[in-house]
Image 1 (cartoon, rainbow, N blue to C red):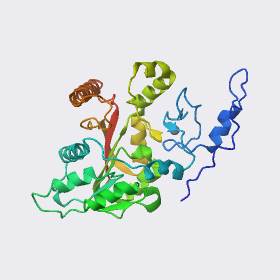
Image 2: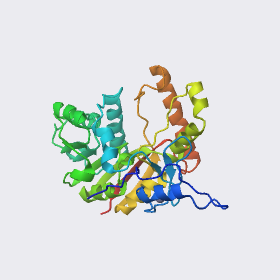
Image 3: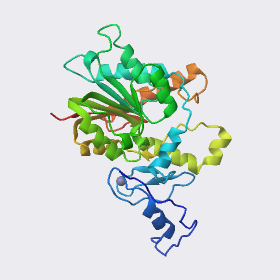
Image 4: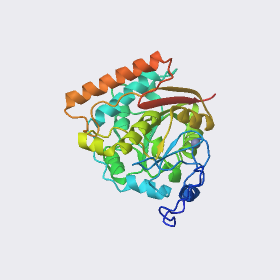
Length: 325
Ligand SMILES: [Zn+2]
């Protein structure tokens, strides 16, 4: 599968023409010719980059494209070549994710014998939590595995005796199932073709298997990123940290749902994502303050979610769906 896009080096910078109605914009048209199709609605109709950012909005469904790479390979090099240091509170994050899974996903059997695949497993915190959560009972009879692009992270996983495959799932594929649980923690919006990836994932889920996706809500992150770009000087002068995150794609809550439905998944549920404990990138100041800030933000978000009859979703979305039986 080739996802190569032509480079943008052939474009003439600044070449734009505006008619009286503002409808003809040759730079915009030249850009659109080399930009990928929207993974959610398949259109190729992108806005100009919003002021001070590389974000473009899909005219069809409002998905955001972070126009920073011209091919899958270029996008993936961002992660391959990175040293990926162990994050602060990494183990606590993995444990809270596993705790959330076992509390939220109802199974007729226990998790002890479940087969679990974590796509984009990083340094293996979630896999370690899965393995650790079972040591006191039946041992490691589950089939627990990860896949990760970053070579250094894979080395750390292997050193911790975790079974992890190195590579992009768009290249090496999804390890053969059937899997009872597949997780993508903050991974889907990094992938060059999230639509293709989900179709591949769905084929490896076992009967009644569950897929969990945690991702950013672009409705809020995109808006914050665009405001930051527009008022950049003021933001810098005030020393405000950048808390907004848009990776390759900025997916709206219904974008996650559409992608999962199109991959053949059913029983789809969207909910406020579990907050990551601590301050992953040490941006929020002293530890106690960070914990308080995150706790407050999450509580307010959940209240708004419930008060709006689940229409409002906060900064991060957790989607779960099952393969239909
Ligand atoms: Zn779209």
